[in-house]
Image (cartoon, rainbow over all chains, first blue to last red; front, side, top):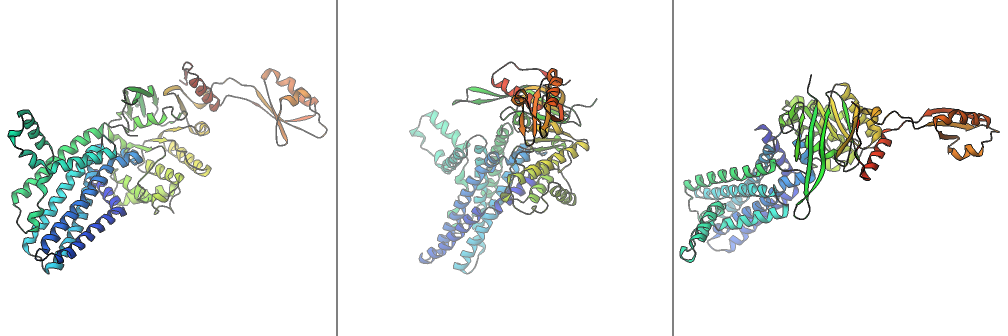
Length: 258
Length: 319
């Protein structure tokens, strides 16, 4: 466990010293600030506009970091050969992988928290107060973080067996496909033959269900999110990440490095 | 009897290549060798001979196609024995956003040292490799030679029993090379086992108890640097000078090479005495007479030449 934390700590430190991430977070805060202006010209729905735009900015920037940094977590270490000296230490490859994952998720948590802080400041600026009902925005931010963790795990899996470019494409493609899992399940059965129906059904359960994490509408309108959904999404993310990371570790453990 | 520090049996590495990866390229073929406890073993070979492939197989960076290897009596797949191994990769590259001190601290953490011990070891290592004043500079600003020093420091930071160095002299200036040689000798005196690869033959001759010569992915010879090249004399070298009034004959002039004020010539052992008489007659003053023995370089070049001509492998053993 401690060895995973050593790698995670270093991954976090790398992110802290990477100016690109600061630029992205700054860009997100700028988007949130611009939401205040847009909100002011949107009569009576300022909060809805600010929360929607703010959460979208947090999600978009988080996704960019998760996909691009996630793919590079392992592949960059292989390409630059920094991994050679690290793996010469008493460290299993799966520990390294888990450490890198934990480090990036921690980075994303800090970034997301900073951006969420900016969003709450924007809300405070417009509404002059933060109500108990606004806690649902925190739930939405938490769901974004869960989604990002899953995206990082997928990006790492793909980067273990393919090139960085393909890994980015696969991760992006799977993310988009995962947004439509609910629609895949509710396809009109009469229009399809039995085999296709079965295939789509299996596929809909194999694909990561990113639609589950979208509570932006509820957050914007101050509607509460059921506790069961919070529990479900938390467990779903943990289980899916565990499966994906196990697969990644199995591939990475047998991979010849350059 | 203790187990060898390193032992390989029929270690082979093939890489798939070609458009569909259907062809196989052999980087290392049937390597069987031992490095004994406490010895300095030099792994020699031209670029692409299989030296780094062997070391990467030993360190678990790549996996063998066939064969097996043990380090300190344990299979190389057992990463817990990395506690007792120090490894310097070829052309080492570390996290360039860290300082040398931070990199060493990062690596030291994997060995479970306390904070105080870690700090002490890091400072000691920075001093030992001559980086004590550059310890707080980010590695992105380091030269190749300085990175090599960091690499060496992280390899010996935890006082390992076995040190594996892949081209440790690479990228170093003469002062740096001398310092690395001194560190290797210090480690040897401390009873450590050292395996290092190099194509700088003078380093191997100076430092190694035994060397293994690898070419074309095959081990071609193992033995002490002196014994591996054989003891056959290649002739005699005479160094002389022509004092005032001396007159060299045409025969002598045809054989000599001039370096500064001195002349040198090579003759066979049977011609030595006759040539000495001739030189004396010509009024030359002989400075030295030395037997010419084959060097590791001669052996190496002969081997590589043969390999390129795809001649049969030669068998040389120091045992």
